[in-house]
Amino acid sequence: MKLKSLAMAAGVAAIAAGALSGPAQAAEAKEQFFPLLVYRTGPYAPNGTPWANGKQDYLKMINARDGGVNGVKLTFEECETGYATDKGVECYERLKGKGATLFDPQATGITFALTDKVIKDKIPLITLGYGLAASQDGGVFKWNFPLMGSYWTAADMLIQHIGKKEGGLDKLKGKKIALVYHDSPFGKEPMPLLDERQKTHGFELIKIPVTAPGVEQKSAWLQVRQQRPDYVLLWGWGVMNSTALKEAQATGYPREKMYGVWWAGAEPDVKDVGEGAKGYNALALNTSGQSPKVIQDILKHVHDKGQGTGPKDEVGSVLYTRGVIIQMLGVEAVRRAQERFGKGKVMTAEQVRWGLENLALDQKKLDALGLAGVMRPLSTSCLDHMGSSWARVHTWDGAKWNFSSDWLQADEQILKPMVKAAADKYSAERKVERRTPADCQS
Image (cartoon, rainbow, N blue to C red):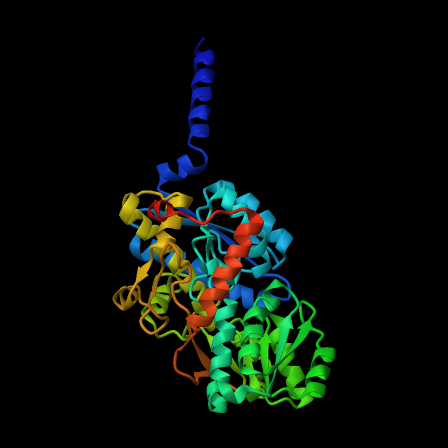
């Protein structure tokens, strides 16, 4: 009889443990779970790794310094995608059931594959500086957040910057601008904006694809040599960027006439090319270096305690800092959601989405977060899921990056009609209705 009682007690305990699995268990333990899609292997690893390390170290720092968010501990689990869309979808499917309330797909192809899924699953996507440009329109894309910029805003800023160098946008008439692009959704995304600017300003746009991952570019740079464009826009990622710079050097194309997107302007892109990349320009969404307070806090609370995810000298690099910013925005979305739905509580995916839609990071707030000078203020709304579209150009001097422009901003007069038209098209094709004013308040 005693044995039977013990067995029954064990069964009750097992049922109780089962009842606390998943989100309920997370709520009981007061843990906010962050799934981390990464690619630490393959041809994109040199760029993907510091990005991933910055995200993970920021979570560790918030736990160590602050005890989490109002007492809620931050937990995470990485899943390796290798930058492959099918593996990214597999990671999403595996991690979404573990209490995931937010995903950073870390790839435009994966974002495209998940955009329809998250409507049903009701889990937000942060696609900072990448993804689907039309998803700036929160009236249609309720779950996508292309925070701080899209490939349309990037392309627009580069054309503005080049126009200014030429003495005005009207001086672009008759010029040749080549787009050397990663032959994927990522590389093709800026084309609608560039096509629009081409029509307006009369320059010739030459589109030159590079087959992924981009280790072989001889034919692309043969076209550059034959066409002799006045400028080259480099829409590359990973090994493609350093390979392009080496090919430009071999071809004799001036690096000072090359302008990369913000994913083609980090240390891994130029360090192996060194002097050969001197004069190369790229957009920058954020600063780099170890002086910002947020970076100092990571060094103090994480790396100095032997808890760092990667090498200490990588902390504060361009992509590491971008990873920190991405994770900060996710954490601040949780904090903002707690202000409405209950401080000290674990937030659901829908509550985190509301937090992302109501971010209000003014300069005072950024300073308090240790991000003074690192990025521009950002505030989102129901209809604006981007929040800001500022970037600067930095130039490689052979040893380091130096800012070579003031802050640039995309022209909303061009962007807004394009975003709305693309969002309306998506809405019609997918039968996704525009959100009502009541939905915006929920």
